[in-house]
Length: 138
Image (cartoon, rainbow, N blue to C red):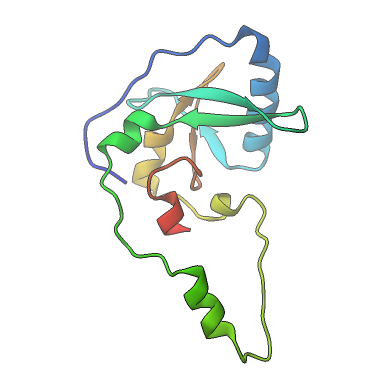
């Protein structure tokens, strides 16, 4: 991910969204996508975004982390090239992975860099969609 020092953000106040944060955090813990962290050097804020359905999506503001990480310059294939390669194939397969990025494990030494603050401190053990190189990794 990146090898530089540490990043700490003062927590945002979200009194009206506490319940939604608690529910979303519980879901992530249940799925084992996150774990509790006791003494973090990296700490980021939760941002709650309202979905069109009226439900809440819990996002993490990794702006400061992304600013210090080098970009993975691995070129992604174009959709056109992928479609051209599939022409004439007798069998095609599509995968709809549950929470796609969450299917990729984080490197253990990078997990603590994803620590976010709610009622406690938690970090991701799986790839989070807001990280700079998540798209290139996925």
